[in-house]
Amino acid sequence: MPILSKPAVLNRFRWKLADLQPGSVPAPAPFNLRPAGEQELDFAVRVVQASYDLDPDWSGCAKHIIKTILPGLRRAFEGEATCLFVLHGNRVIAASAYDPEPADGIHLVTGPCVFIEYRNRGIGGALLHTTLEALRARGLTEAVGLARPGTPSAKFFCSKFGGQQLMAPVPIVQPAGSETAVAA
Image: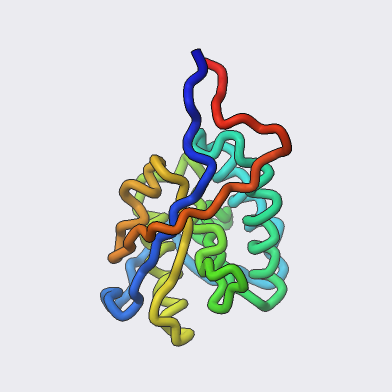
């Protein structure tokens, strides 16, 4: 009997930036958070691609990542959006791209993407808070991001800093002829 996969939609989350507590949430020691440089797209792609590829909650979503997330990430390095990095020494271990003026209304282009071996250390929370602060500094009053229903991000992470789920799901880009179930 097939096991149903996660829904082929993404939930929208909204953060009211006026409600965001002032002051940064620092990356835990020994990690450093900084803006990505103009020539660092390859590092960002590596972190974001690995973060999604190795996360079982995103299994079967490669086309969505290639068609939607990676082009948004590239915009972050073309001046239309911005990207933040978390480093462990000289190694980029996390990234978050955001766009203050997105055509699709989604400000968090990638969401906080953290290499799987560095998760559950407060890095994603620090990255999310810094991203939201950066959007507020650009004059935004609210920010919107996406998460796959049923994932830990949707259940726990997106509610950090006052994030609220909206009732307008966004479809995941699916490969032609893909099924909504996977074999056991």
